[in-house]
Amino acid sequence: MSVKINATGRRSVEAEVEVPGTPEEVWQAIATGPGISAWFVPTTIEPREGGAVTASFGPGMDSVSTITAWEPPRRFVANSRDDMGPDDPTIATEWIVEPRPNGTCVVRVVHSWVTDRDNLDKQFEGHVHGWRAFFRILRLYLTHFRGENSSAFQLMAIAPEPKSEAWTKLTNSLGLGGVKENQRFATASGVPRLAGIVERVGEEAYPEELLLRLDEPAPGLAHLFAMSMGGQVYLSSRFYFYGGNAAMAAKNEEPLWRNWMGEQFPLPEAPQ
Picture 1: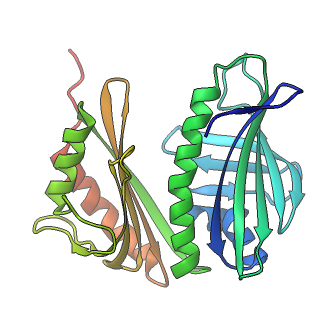
Picture 2 (picture 1 turned 45 degrees about the vertical axis):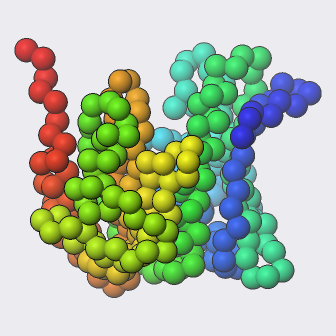
């Protein structure tokens, strides 16, 4: 989606998704630390105006914002500058929950900022694509695992370009090359065990993506995707487990997957 610019010079982009649940249930998923961590990245929230929102995208990659409006269960706004350069504007991120008469809600996120420069436009257009991917996880979480305990981990591997070859290597090694949506699957021999249903295969514009709903090793979701950056390919794998055994499943599975990914995609040697 293109950046919108209004008469005051405020620029904005937005993304939305319709999800099952009451406003109160959806609010728990998008405005509490445990709820957000169940479908996004590990996050903490101080639930008040002036409170901090801290989302952790990896070691040393925390995004911190300050809540400027807090109106449960319908709306909150958080402002951030820590992700921007010293000359860039404050970014306001607004979350809105709109109930629908059929027992669902629309969740909308709007990023907005004031500037006369277009240096951030492409970055935030990319954010919209990212939110759409995470919103698919949110919808599955609220559909199948709403309110359950959760535990998650994320792994990142690096491969040389081109992206299509790195993705083919990953999916073929997993035994997931060529899978179709709604197909039952299980990982190949010699790979940590995953089994369940393929919920999504990447669209034509972004084919390097898989979203899986898991029966094994525990009820949960797995999101796999590839992206190019700086002449390399980053292969991301996110695992979310739910229910009473979620924490144990994450504890047991993370080292297995970390070792396997390291064997398949060893880190490049540092130059001497």
